Image (cartoon, rainbow, N blue to C red):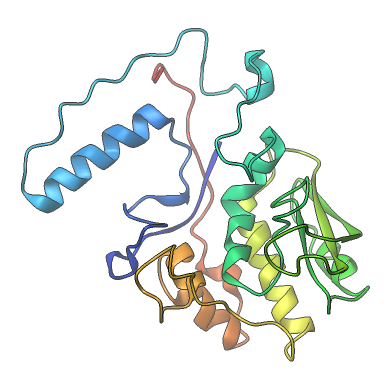
Amino acid sequence: MGVEGPVLDSAFASFVGRSPIAQRHGLTMGELATVVNSTDAAESGESPADLSVVEMIGWDRTMWWSDTGLPWVLPSPNIPTPESALVFAGTGLVEGTNLSEGRGTTRPFELVGAPWIDRRFAPALNRLGLPGVVFRETWFSPTFHKYAGEVVAGVQVHVTDRAAFESVRTAVCLIDIAARLYPGNFAWRLPDRAQVSQESTPFIDLLWGSDALRRTVDAGGDPVSLLPPLALVPAGSTRY
């Protein structure tokens, strides 16, 4: 699992981002709980919670879900498959734009588009030569959420090499290409009141953990330059 993306700026902490961890952090739930427990204690000056983590048996960090032999249990209604979980760490950022992230379809976070997308979108993305992914032109009609009941043009994100795939870089490029090709249509979204209290802060700033991505895209800069070098979580003996 590659560690990708920015670390939260505390000024942008919200319900969708509370702790200073990377966008794609590569931690197990047990490791994440341990990190958050110690971080929150250090920030508050209080003692950490009495936390016990049960070790997993028969697992190591090199395994993908398909290697476990276990059935997939949806962690969210919009993460129906291991494939949707793989792309979500990146394409979840699309929620901060007026592009549909595929909610209301059977392939949420793998389908991205809008009614105003045209045939330039998929070729422009494929010309980038991003590792481990290709983009297929497609059309879909969400049953709910953005553009419900409308015909939406866009792309399906096909991961061809999950070990090479960089979900955050892929999503950043996808958003940037949409902003460049469709400047009269593309826009950033404000958060829903039910999601966060910072109603006037563009949702992308809360998802990214700072306003750097939005400002760079709006200025016509290269948002990939915001990404730190890709790091790999080494295989080790941690089993929780």
